[in-house]
Image (tube, rainbow, N blue to C red; front, side, top):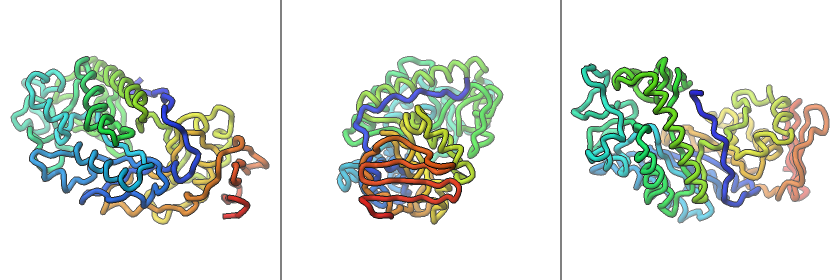
Length: 391
């Protein structure tokens, strides 16, 4: 209850064991996007672009054109690195009018039932700006939205909304149908009980009824929703999410929210939990070896990285056929530090010859067709051999 757990659907694209094609990061540049993203994923991998990418450009549009700029970034990326998989941002909780697809529907009275409204006879905690639809300004950019600017909210109790979101918003010409988009990051969620996110305490999801994440904390009151209303919206949002997963996977793509992120690994102090975690993930049928895996560098926001060799060793020893190592959301340039790229990512280990083995107490190894990887959890020492050479 409250936070859904979705069984990941198996990807329909071929797996890769090549390390530099098994990378993942979320590049974002406020000032103008990227001419190339080879600074991290030189061999391929996944580049997942946030809505804030190219923000200084698309906020000057009249009206703003965030979706088109995300597709433009994917085109640029694939022009310089055709092997790269490019993913883009979507949101199935917030109806963001700087997205062209969404703005057009907010403006059209025929679709008024798709959006949650301010309650009547209630003085809201956020400005209405003359719109009947609930919207706040929590993360709203400055610019021309084509409608009163703010973060609106979808009402997932409307079945026709679900069909539109899947067919047009997710799978249409500014999404998976663009020909250059290989996957989707679907942001935010609805909860049906109080839920506190570490980075957004006090938002609407913390209300006793639950609610949408990263929305003004008074939103349930301002919309006049009951606990039953919230539960119904949460339930139907779940159905929309599952439909989105199926549609994207059927098209040969994937969704970030289906990835197993780190398989329970402690990113703050991985050495302290090394033996325990490695034993769990070396077991037959473990999450890391069987599920699509997003594996972050420990303490990834620090430069230099605290333990890149050990991180890569753990990844190579436990990973399954669909797995990526790198960075999750770190923010946008110029505030975020440049991504550190360990040279060992370009090593060719070949394909695994078997699974993980604990060869002695706290020492884990895996043989590859062109190398060997070991990690000693007692000393926190990682050893790599490629083509007979110790790296």
